Amino acid sequence: MKIVQIFWMIVIGAGLLACSSASIFVQTDKVEINTSVPADDSLQAFIAPYKKELAENMNRVIGYATEDLVRNRPEGTLGNFVIDETENYLEEHNWLKGKHFISVMNHGGLRAPISKGEVTVGDIYRLMPFDNTVVLAKLPASELDSIVAYLRNSGGEPIGGFQITNEDFSLLKDAELQDTLYVITTDYLSAGGDNMSFFKRSYETVDTGIFLREALIKRVEKIDTLRPIIDGRIKL
Amino acid sequence: MERRIFLQKSLVVGSGLAISPGLLSFPKVPEYADKITILHTNDTHSNIETFPENHAKYPNQGGVARRHALLKRIRKEEKNVLLFDAGDIFQGTPYFNKFHGELEMKLMSQMRYDCATMGNHDFDIGLEGFKNAYQHGDFPFVCSNYDFTNTELKDVTKEYQIFEKGPFKVGVFGLGVGLEGLVAKTNYGDTVFQEPIPIANRIAKHLRFEEECDLVICLSHLGYKPKQFKDNDQTLAAETENIDLIIGGHTHTFLPKPEVHQNKIGEKVLINQVGWAGLALGRIDFFLGEKKKHKCHELVLV
Image 1 (cartoon, rainbow over the protein chains, first blue to last red):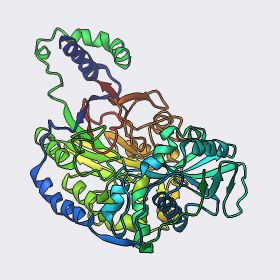
Image 2: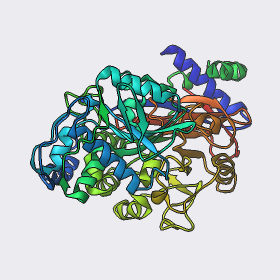
Image 3: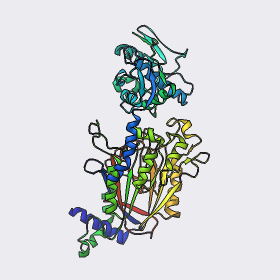
Image 4: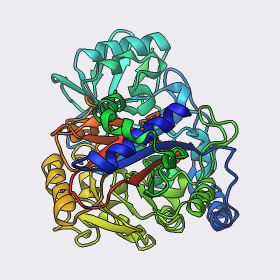
């Protein structure tokens, strides 16, 4: 305390008498917003109807599933749905710029199945409770080997744009492997989540800021009817 | 370090004053000095509600109703308060997806934000979408290095804004990050990104010398980290002059306290950033020692 006071006398003394330039004194603080700050009632009341409408939105029907969509290894209808519709969403919104992208996501990230019948916003939230965003990564082409090895080892993850067996793998749509491998994934995996260490060797990643969940909701609204797809993209 | 340098320079003058009895009862801050409180957030990302109790990282933290209560308290205590945001107001919770930014704008108006700049995610519903949401905002956006001339946002944002609070004249401008690759082209349309540093120098000089602002503040969505981006708050600080405070965003950096950097001509400039999601409110109090007799001034940290 004393030191502070003396210090003040000195700086103010300097400010009053000697400085060729004016002084601006600065004091800083960071105020954390936690339980020590009680919530303001008026603003809470203002938010309430929005909160209610949001909750109602969870029960909104956005489409219809002809069969259950479930996760499975090596390949499952739920994983294929997530992959294919994410690709379709990005294509639709011009993110892929004519490049051949493969997709790699994770089995563990599919948190709940979609049951046959009406599909609601809440169903997609339960499938994807995490705020994962869609990431576009550029990897050296040689990393495709690492991805394939990972899939063989794990027994399968949701993938798209390429197919693999125990012996073989190839890009779909007659795409040829160039120097760069373009990959659609999530922010979680691109940061090396689930030990997908090949993403650490990306030389560029772009986080689109698009929530995977929101992309899927938009796509279900658009296609209306979900038909489970198994096309043999992974056979192990 | 900064403090020591200032102390050494001032010691001779100071020692003469130390014996003056009238000055012995000084509080922590000089009573005669006029004070302005700058409050700020960044990257609030549509976080309206307090994080739930079972949140993995930030249980029971954040929330606009709490921020509002805190702001009310500070405004009751302080005469001169300005509240700023450094961008990425949008995107992050279902509130944004459902209400397209309307609620964020309404809440910021209720909390009496004085000014904000646009972050990359504020383009996420397109320029038209931003404009629609902004109908509900009653505070200016400063975007100094986005040229919106050929877009829907022409004349919607400002190059800079000047605030007069008590005896203080405060100039505020805003810098945004490069949009290519970060934002879908369809969303930013014909927005032209301009190199931020030359623009910062031009506007800061104007604010300091033409407008005679006591404080020049930059709301920056360039990001804090030096390696991640070509331009960032640290290069901005080092390569400009006439800026007193850079309120940063984009990188979600939790600075434990504002950092003191040296500008192009060796003067002090502050950089602060308070993470994201409205988990904290940055607060910097400035005390005006001597008013406007000289156009230059020195920041003295206490």
